[in-house]
Amino acid sequence: MAQLRQNYNEFLAQDTEVIVVGPENANAFANYWQDNDLPFVGLPDPNHSVLKLYGQEVKIFKFGRQPAQVSIDKQGQVRFVHYGHD
Image 1 (cartoon, rainbow, N blue to C red):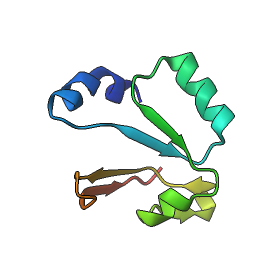
Image 2: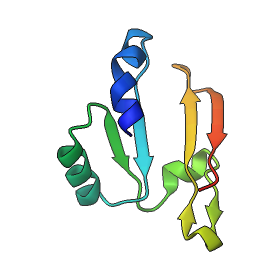
Image 3: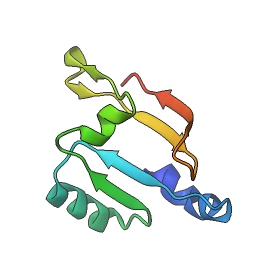
Image 4: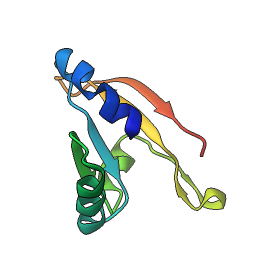
């Protein structure tokens, strides 16, 4: 998240918005965003409905969802996907 915050203005200069989706509830997200003064959008997804749309994997032995970065263009087309391992 620190890297996203550091580079956020560069994303905006490229007419790009950053949205972070995570499995936490709305209160946990709001607290984290406030505590860390994050300039981009945080979308709580406790039911994993958004995350499932983009194929984010669940690893039972890793205790949850694996990190994923997805770039989506203005027409809603996925242009880049990277799935993390930890």
